[in-house]
Image: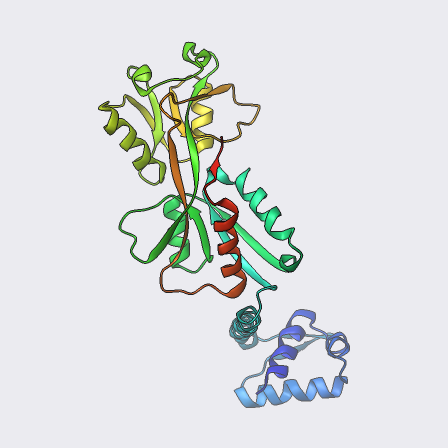
Amino acid sequence: MNLKQLRYFQLLAKTQHYTSTSEYFAISQPSLSHSIAELEKEIGIKLFQKRGRNVELTKEGKQYLIYVEQALAALAEGEQFVRELTSVSNGHIGLAFIYSISSNYIPKIIKAFLNQPENRNITFSFYEGLSTQIVEGLKSKRFEIGICSHLEDETDINFHKLIKQELVFIISNSHPLAKKRKLDLKDIINEPLILFTERSGMKSVIDKLFEKAGIEPNIACLVETEGAMMGLVSINYGIGIMPRVSIPSEFDVTLVPMSKNYQKRDIFIATMENRPLLPAAQKFYHFLIEYSDDAIFGR
């Protein structure tokens, strides 16, 4: 058994036609037939059966195809890994990020990175989610780099402070407080509040704000995303606290700054502690740090 035989088998299973398969591989039809016959002889099962002028997989052939495709996919992944292992100008990067930076910061940073000629052959896959989901994705190797909140007790994750993001009140335009230029936490002490759940990295940040101010928040409900908060605030279900983000026009809300020194939260780059980045991902990691050094995003 050899790699060519497996590739011949995989395509023949798809085309179900010896002529088109042999033409694709630029070999003679007898050579293809001989190769398939030798493969069948070696593994001890019949892979194809006649169906008119074509062929089709046998029951055993269908089962064998599953393993062949898995094996070929693993080999292709290994070849890609080796290519990326030695190249800083080629490679693929899996990048995950939280919702609040998906529509503004991420497009800007990717554009700036790819505008450098030496990076134009580097490709990306993008994932959006909560900080907890991003950390789990790093552990399961779904992607290489995450941009998210810092999570406590995650000793396998290396967090590097990246940017700061301003926190603001989000208020329905029909609410009297929407006309204020600035607000303090004490100004909303009696208002129903829409805050983030435990799954969001924002929860601990906002909890500390209330704790420092000595205020017990009047929680109306908890949400996981900024989008959900925008929707509920727009119907005047409560007042929210969130990072400053772009607000779609369909939401009838206003963002009001916090009055005390523009409260901010830190956003971090997250990577696996003991899993070195491949050259292209390592290059992007350092680019993130250089590009975002001392930046306050959202101001």
